[in-house]
Image (tube, rainbow, N blue to C red; front, side, top):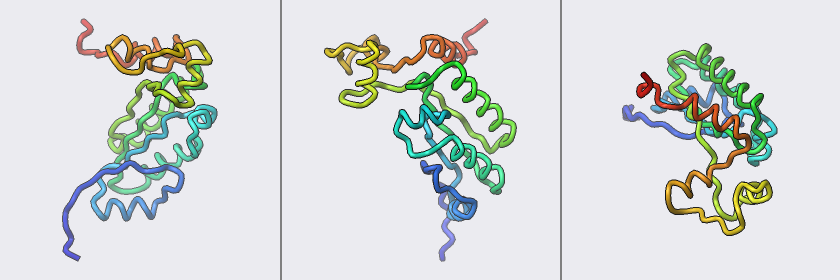
Length: 171
C-alpha cells in the first residue's frame, strides 16, 4: 500500500517460471532474474541431478524477452560430467542467441569450473576416472584447489581458459 521503491534480485528456479510471475516480481521491485541451471545439455543436467531440462532454460530467456523491464543473468559450469566439445559449443551458441535476442536484458552469462567437494557424487566420479586419489586433500594451496576442479575434457578445459582469459593484458 505504501508503494515502497525497493529494488531486489533473486535466484529463481527455471522450471515453473511464468510471464505472470515475472511481471509480479518486477512490479514488486525485482530488477534482475538470476538462474543457475549449471549445464546446457540434458545429459549433463541429469548427471548433475538437476530437475530441469534444456527446454526449461530456453523458456526463461524467451520469457525475459517478452516481459518489459525484465533483466537476466545465467550461471553455467563448463567441463562438468558429460561435457564434450559439442555440448560446450551448444552452450556458446545459447550465449550468442541469448545475447542477440535479449540484447541489454542479458546482464551476464557466467561460466565457471565445477569444484569437487568431499563425499559427493562428483568426487566419486572423479575418483573413478582417476582424476583424484582416495587420499585427496580438498583444502589448501592454489595447487590443491586447481586439482579439485572437475575436468571432463582437457580440450574443453583449455578452450574455456583461453576464451575466458583477460583480454586487456594481451598486447
